[in-house]
Image 1 (cartoon, helix red, strand yellow):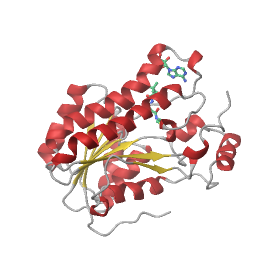
Image 2 (cartoon, helix red, strand yellow):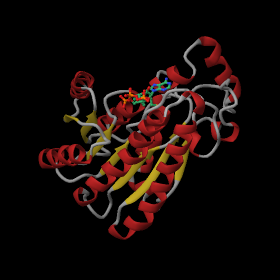
Image 3 (cartoon, helix red, strand yellow):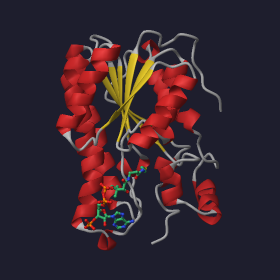
Image 4 (spheres, protein in one colour):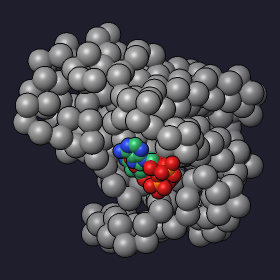
Length: 263
Ligand code: COA
């Protein structure tokens, strides 16, 4: 799967991606950059961030990186302030920072559950809340990265199921509250995507991978470009009447859920 965009489609736009230093989020940042956008990424680890920023610049993208934990509102707010000062008001906010580890509820401490809820739900709220007055309006949009766990149960994912359901309800609520300001808010729900930390955490070995491939209706893992293409569409004028929606990009995984995961 290749990226689908028009040359210069996002020229002059500013795209800010939380969790943007790796995985699906980095590919989204790259895709918007290749389509002409200026890209800001935010992440926790300075080394990874710097490598990602250099990679984006190597692709010809104007890029800047900010080190912050999405759970820390003041740090997110400060990063957004600096990002907007340098690259101008935001056209697109991608809330991609997320946490995950496979564990049954009884092998998870209260703090482990909270860590994932805080990164996913509070982190998404923090980024949206801090971004609101920095959007270029009308016409800006938010893309919250969700997961099939939001709508169908997976064993060993009680924290992620609860968190991503929360993310999708944030999407819907903010879409209602912010529609009048001309800001669209949608969720993208990637399923099993190849070469990601999520896949290596949930289905790390060849056997587990095969189980996923046999389970997912399209019988293959997705690619990061599959997800990036959906993001490029949802942030574009072609989706100007789309808000409050949860778009699956999961090969049909939300139809079958986490039956591939063993307890
Ligand atoms: N099984 C059970 N509990 C676990 C665990 C596991 N595999 N991994 C972490 N935890 C628990 C820790 O024991 C801790 O609980 P405790 O204080 O009661 O011991 C709690 O989770 C927080 O761990 P900590 O490492 O301090 O949190 P963190 O904020 O640094 O990390 C995580 C957050 C745990 C979500 C970590 O997995 C992470 O940073 N993930 C980001 C990357 C990622 O998950 N990407 C994939 C997204 S799909």
